[in-house]
Image (cartoon, rainbow, N blue to C red; front, side, top):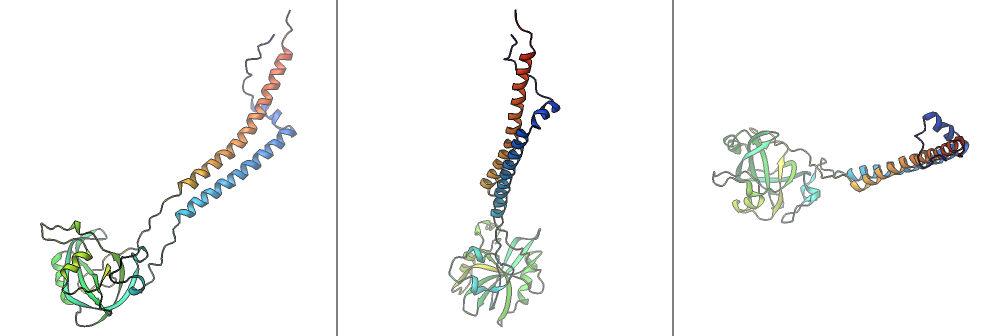
Length: 264
């Protein structure tokens, strides 16, 4: 008796095709491909959803609006107002401050910061411009008009932490609204954020003010589902291959058994 417990070797491509091209297995292949196509479509849908979830609708920060439309004095700053370009009218007081260690698109220098009182009597900190050093920033104070109401425009940004100030060296590096309120003579109602001017005072350079970056993250759950559907699609075709191979192996075993010489 032949040993039927030994599995036949893998079929060659020609041997496999002899079984696979039978009408029954051609139909099974069509069905497997249809299932794989459906799974692939589901995977593509999940992938598109993961990408859609990453796409965050950017707020219209680049369209200037009146400051009063996005911010209120003595009220916390909202996420929607961060980085918003705004316009307003007001008058600068004679209270200025120079901030050192300010990076301006990769170059360190100093800011000249002014105290603006709006037409409504609210206080707003304004980054007037950037200079290579503190002395140049301070020298530009005389060019800031303090005797008239002016219209200004710029980007509205959140207050900074005063922890970065170099107190021992007598330098102030952070634009902290809380610290400025303590320095101003009569702050009154104060905006929580500060403004960076689009057009600096003569003698200063414009402060670099790129649009705000919004935090986004990939939806890993949808991406994982997309990968799963692709695996299912491949498994559908592999299952057809495995079934056809099993049929060939069974027929090969039967053929070997039939060709084996009869025992005594």
